[in-house]
Length: 409
Ligand SMILES: *Cc1c(COP(=O)(O)O)cnc(C)c1O
Image 1 (cartoon, protein in one colour):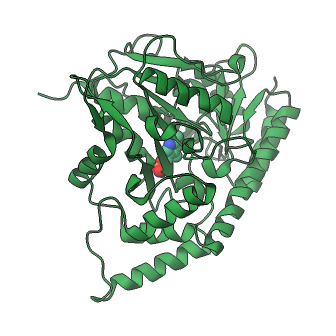
Image 2 (spheres, rainbow, N blue to C red):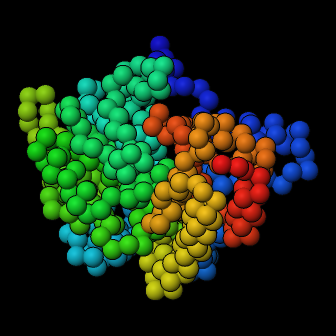
């Protein structure tokens, strides 16, 4: 018999629904030049330092003396060491090499990590949310049934809307695992150090685990916004963290990310015994994962070199310039705009009387611009759309001009 949890998942995934609508519009209007500010993929090429590292690694593969086959499942020492030095020790954070697990990206890690949780664990997510956290737990059979309102019966949803400044309130019922993503996808908003500290304290007091996704950490511009949850007191006991080179360095096609599982993080057995998650994750990865490609890991290492990090910073600045331009232009047009200051995403309130999808349709049909309907990320996303700053400058400017002339609010 099949795992029926998969059947519970709604069929049309958000981005396939969008693709379908765009395709239908294209068929009717072949002359329209459509600009996508929708899907969260990057557009700028890999930086020279990464390309050079890829070439060097490729040449090594061409000679028996330097050829590499299977690597260590948790990642090569050269990369784990570089990660620890640059992302943690240099910032005064205590993380060691054996707490780093290199992977093919944060989607796999955020999706797979729930395999370590018991079947009855109470999951909480912010709403709207990156869909992977929820769908992976649906597959794991922890979420109950999907209601008419778009909520799973056994998930605790923490609404994040303009009304609460996109800061999730601590839950009133007991939860075991909370997924947090800051800077947030989709809203582009952040949590201050104090706001995140409340969650760490909550997790300590309620014996909860925080799964903290920092895929957009490199886009943080303001002081006082944590780049890692381990900057906070007590986080080593209660949090695991997901990192990705995808948005930081344009690795969406190369594939590399890593997870941090500190040795102190534990969960309980039914009989109350404490079990450390680090050795369990090690066991899981070495059973089901044969490591990230050597080429990807050399490419990731190059992101931290002096040249690499300067070059990557330029690309991030390029996207953040888009974000600034979009923010101020949309604001001037009278839109309520959130995010985009420490993240490449802007979360835009749709005009009075419209829904996420009706505004999506009107942007597509009138301005030939593709956005992502906020409701696709959860019920509390209704009434918003997400725009991304990952486009090129010129196309982004054209899109803004069209919105200004074609959309009335
Ligand atoms: C893009 C993204 C990731 C990274 O995915 P990869 O598999 O590393 O490409 C992780 N989390 C969030 C919230 C994202 O938006």
